[in-house]
Amino acid sequence: MFRTRERKSKKGFILVYVLFACSLCFLIVLGVYKMEILIRNNDLKLQQNTMKVDIIQKPREFLLTELDENIYKNVSSISEEEVKEFFNTTTSTAIKCDDNLVKYINDSNCFLAEYYVNHKFYKEELYEYKIINGSIFYGCIDYSYKKGGIK
Image (cartoon, rainbow, N blue to C red):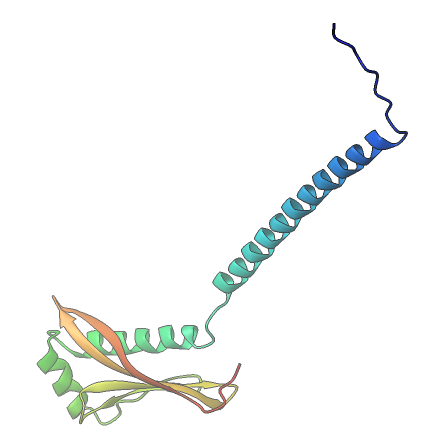
């Protein structure tokens, strides 16, 4: 009825399949390893960027804190008219911290903050202020960098 034929396999024929399967597995492992390395590098770069501190952040905080203390100490009732009147009548409107300074500009009713890094001009920012419920809030409305800035 049915005849069974015996097949003759060539020597090393199975070895080709094993080598192909092993190389395929090895390539998959290398691809996964490369993706993990890329994820790790991305995480490290993200961590470095989040830990990076702006070089003028500390002087900005000092200047605006000193400005707040000056206003709260010298103005009896905090309102826009009182603050404007205080700075218009005060002869010395500049507040210094190291080389950095913030000064009141009468014409535009704003504050100009100038920042210096290593005794060289770095940046200036123009702040407007709003008074809400007796608290002063500053908002940067304009800024300028030195051409070729410090990196």
